[in-house]
Image (tube, rainbow, N blue to C red; front, side, top):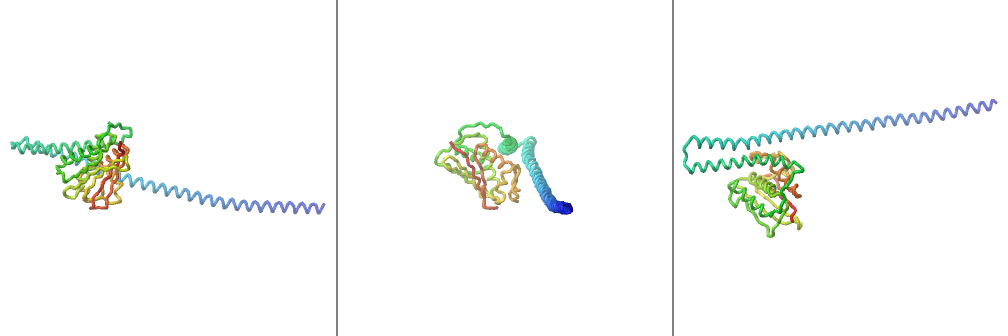
Length: 294
């Protein structure tokens, strides 16, 4: 009985010690797991907080830039609207208050018509910029001769800017290229490109426009100027709404900052794409428009 009791005692003691050892090991593991878990959760939450702060900072910076661009846009539009209105008013008051020679009257009428065109152009730019953001906007689609369209647009800009043929040179393609699209919107897009090229030229405009076929079923329109150029870091940004290149020469040119955004929206709506290429400031810019042909 004594041996049996001793055996039971040592058996219980062994089981107890084994249980204690297992419990200690499990406790140590659980304790370390808890620390590891706390460490992992801490790292995760810290990362989330840092990510949130970074995203919040990016959002705030973008909002600040967007507000600045909106302010610049409002100032530009106000200027583009106010200047021709004030000019027309001045010439009308002059015509009303003085007896002028017929030649002088015709000169004043021409100036007022130019101011009126400028005023209408600004209004149309704003309206078109608004409509191009509509994803489901309908197009008046038809087959358009690309060379004929660009040629008409070149003549339009020459007339509007009072330029001679040497200021904007146009090379017609050897073969006719036709695209399917809205003629009015496409002409507006090319007019914006040409207007942009003339506006940012140094001195007398020297713009070259040519059309080629690319890849068999693609028409390429190149509009090249010898103006102020664009820094490589700005090439993709110029197509954003309200964006103006941070360049002193560019700042001197007036505009709404909508022209190139309209160009991109119209061209992409027609299944094409537009890119800008420049070797840097003061080295001119080339805009390349690619459109599918039929």
